[in-house]
Length: 87
Image (cartoon, rainbow, N blue to C red; front, side, top):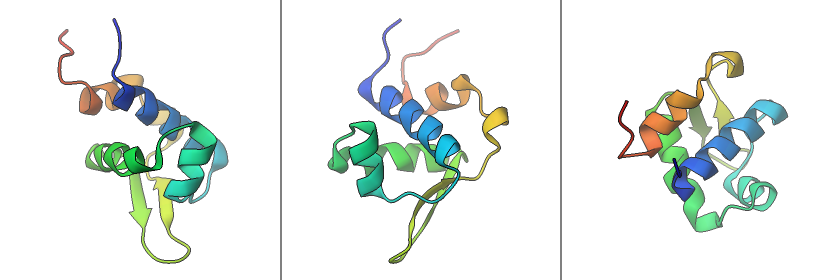
């Protein structure tokens, strides 16, 4: 099975936010994860829709996990990023 770039970026984002345990802005995510800055909003909006992350607006804003990292299954991420997965 081959995943889309969106899924790859989403997995990286969740792991990074779990490791950092604090709010990270889009630019920080892009630089540290090797994701194009223009792609960060697409990935984060999917993760927000899944209830995995949330965003804080403003100068000190950014993205953060709202779900316990130990309760996030890989399937939670794949199911919102992949259109063709069938089990």
